[in-house]
Image (cartoon, one colour):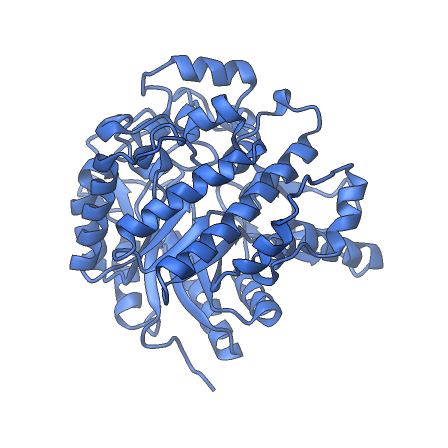
Length: 488
């Protein structure tokens, strides 16, 4: 029986390009869909939540963002300037002892318009240099090909993922990455949080609510195109880079029946199927599961499939699964059940759990449950691609940040990861989300901080930008050095 993590366990951290890089339009970069998300730095938390719940803007706001080339009200255009400061940041990752770094590649930095025939060499050079810097420091690279942001030209000209032609543009982009960066990337991930398309339509599939007559139909048609693109990309990776692992990812929504009423147990089963299993079932088994036929019928969804799609799905099965895990929820048929916030969704509140400052319920045991359920279902290696605590931090006058609450959060979740390993689950790595403070995806603020490295910037982008190591930095450093044995 195993008693702890394998000696080659991949301890690491994760960011996304749109939330960290900045460098808006630098180096030949085109405009991406995430560049258009708006934040007024004067908004209070309630206003931020109201503005950014589910769809971040209307068609009119989308059109205004296209005209506005300023960075003041668009935090993703600023990020934390990782684009220019990556060497210093990777030095800090190395100092901490990180084994693997998960980041995403910006499609519009490689193909500014998405449909370009030839890639932007300056964009490729940036990733070559940055990934080489990781390897020089002994850090493996876990690259996400698409983390929400597609070139906005694909939305304007083709309708984005609604148009099957986008599949070919994406596969051409992926093929270019395999050719140009294949020797620098250790693990590939085609899509971030596949189920985001359903729960955050702009992020996941670039849809605007007031442009769609049947939003559910549009969402699942887009998702189908992404699933086809995913399978084609996995197959291509296996052909071009034999032996390199390429996986799939969802935002994992662990759920328990709210009561022992049979209706709640049934609801929990259906929430698992429709919110989690559908996406991983297709990526691992290569076909649509039978239970989705009833779901599609309930919501009048008719997927337009090409005659070869079944064959394509079967031909590109993933080598491992990864997921983001931040919270759990309960499932119930009671429509009046109290709600609370969560990643991508509003969740049914579990009265037995504590909540974070942002209302997300904290459930370390739920991570162990998730790991066991996913491994039991698929028997594939698992990677925790995202897990972390977003909260307010205080930079003291001496440059320290005392975040014992984050240490407690990480300790409790890593403890349950270790228990899952002892249970027999094959976990290959853990990339804590945002290893360094970045623009938070939901609210677009930086005051919801996840990192073990503090970045001196406020919600309006004001500040020195200087990096400071939090108490959690040194705690995680010790955890990595001891391979998860020293957690106190």
